[in-house]
Image (cartoon, rainbow, N blue to C red):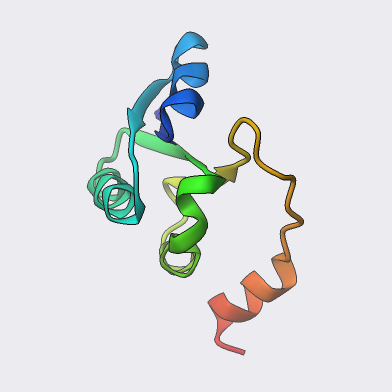
Length: 98
């Protein structure tokens, strides 16, 4: 299974230097279009998304995570972004509809 990095140019370039395929996106619409294209691809097991691009797509990404176990979608801090605490309890509540 492949790993794909989706995000800003700096973010993607770092992963490409490590041998991971990457797609440069600028906004929420580009991000979701690319994520949706890889969801049904049986060859992609992990999608790494830069947190700066995923900021406006958190609800949509959580919804996808709730419905599918593969590919795993993981938000990674982009270069220069502030470290943000992830509230897994809130994410779980949203997924379970509680």
